[in-house]
Length: 301
Image (cartoon, rainbow, N blue to C red; front, side):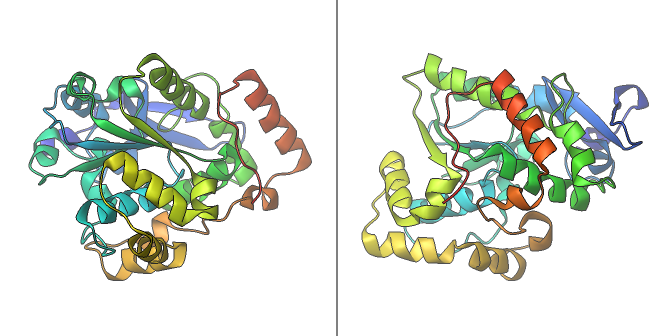
């Protein structure tokens, strides 16, 4: 549906920092995507597509991988596909092929089961049937300071953000909408609230830092949630295949349309310390204090 990539000037939202940098967004339901990426055809216009996605039919065995951008979505999605196929072989396509907000409903519904949809949307933008059928959900979290650093480089590559890291933080720490994709604290608080208020909805939580430190144990814990067999041998094989460098190489060399350079950078825990000034760290800590979450984030391993 080519019309999904049409952009009306009236729909474009322009947000600015204090240094002359501008990001152009298109949004629906508190979810904002890059206008330039919509124009280029990278993904459909959220103004028209997200309302349609909410009405999308889903299967009871569909699984949703939910995470804020740069929290470890690629890594976790690949692990999940290996567990479900019972083999430490890479999925032939990138995880974007199953990314919820990057496709129209017809494309997603045509994918073969078992389907692992990955997404950065807030709970209110998921399909109505996601809630009705209580689809299994994997929720990934990561230290927001490392997210901010990785997100900065992501935006430099994909939406050609031309400012410095400190200038980018003017956007990341915005507390009023809109924010590219959505504000980190709002995304996190809404998902934590959903999990608390829906104890009968099957949700498995993963912390990026724990997955990095104890990959085999976290893979086996995830397998238990997915109700798929996983012995030590398979868990170790998956952990090796999904190490940062191996997965980065596979994304570029094995997968169709691989674009490793745009989505993989370092994957390190604590890299924020090489980017944050003392003043910026204090500003970020104040932001976290104003918006406390129930999660306790690991800043070092």
